[in-house]
Image (cartoon, rainbow, N blue to C red):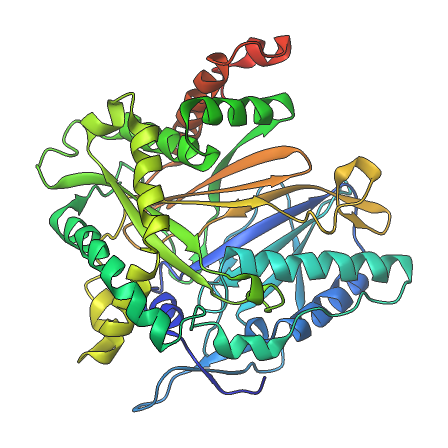
Length: 454
C-alpha cells in the first residue's frame, strides 16, 4: 500500500462529523498488574504503528481535492503521564499533522501501570483498534522477554478494498430490492426525533480536550453464563438483552418533559461490523456501518422490548440493511455540499450509542490465568470508551476478556454529570441483574447478588 489514499464515505463522515469540543475519538484503557518498561513499550508501539499504516497517517485536506490519508509528520509513539487518582484531560489528536492514534503510558507511584490507547474514528473502528492493540501486546511481550518479534500477519494491500465491502456491480444490483426496505428505516429516522440528554450538568467539555467521565459494570464467571442463559431463554442475543437494559436505564433518568412530543423517541446508534472472512488480515481500518433503533417510553416499558429488538435486528441482518447507512453516505458525497452538508447542522443523531466488541484477544490469551502476558506482567483488565458525538451525550461499549464481561459507560460532562453517569450504570446493571434472578437454578453466589449494581 502506498500513500496518498482517498477516504471512503464512512471515513469522511467520521472526519467531518467531529467538532473541536467533540472530536470523534475513542479509547481503550489496558490495565496491567505491575509497572511497564517505557523503552519496551515505545519499541512495541513503534512496530505496531508500522504494521497498521492508517494509524500512522494524517488527513490531507486541500481545496478542490478529496480528503486523503498521507504519512504523518514524525511522531513519538508513546507519551508518559502520571495517572494519580484520576486521569487528566486528554488532548485531542491533530488530524492535519497525525498520527491518528496515540498511546499513553499511565504510571503510578504504587506500581501498576495502564496503557491508554486513543484512536480517531477516521482511521479505524473499534475492532480495527483491537487488532492494533493485539499486535502491540504481542510485540510488548516479546520485547520484555528479549524474544524475536512475532511475524506480521497484516496485509496493507487489503486497505485499498476497505470501502468496497465485497460488492461488485452484480452484487450491488441484487441488493437493491432488499435496500428498498431500508428506506422504511430512513423514513422512520426522519419522522422521529431523538431525545437529547441535556441534564443539569455544570462542567463544559473543553474544546480539544477529552474529560473521560465514565462508569463501569462488570459481570464475571457464573454471572456471564447466567446472562447468556437468560438471553437464550428469552429467544434473543446477549447483545439485544443488554441493549434493552440500556434503553430502560436511559428511560429511568429522562425528565418528565422528555418524549412529550409524539415524534420523540429514545434512539440507540449501533455500529455493525461489515468485515468478511477475506478481510481477516486487513490492518486497522474502518469496516463498519451504523443502524438506529427507536423506542418510545411505552415500548421501553413493555415486557416484549428485547424481543422487538431481536426481530428488528434479524430483519436488518437478513436483508443486509447494514449497507443502508453506507449507501446514504455514498449518495450524499455525490450531491452538492457532500457529506459536509449532511452533518452540517450538528443535530442530535441518536440519544446514545451502544456497541459490543465481543470476546477480545482470544488469540493472544495464554494458559496462565487466561490473560494476555507482557513479559512478567499480565493484562488484568480492559475498559472500552466509545466515541461521543455532539448531541449524543452517552455511549456504552462492551468487551469480554479474561472471563469478565465489561460494560463501560462514557458520558459528556457538558450534558450529564458524574452522579447521573453512575445512576445510569447502576440502573443498567440492575436490569441485567433481574435477568439473572429470573434464571433457575443458579449458583448461590449469583442469587445473592442478582439485581445489585456491578
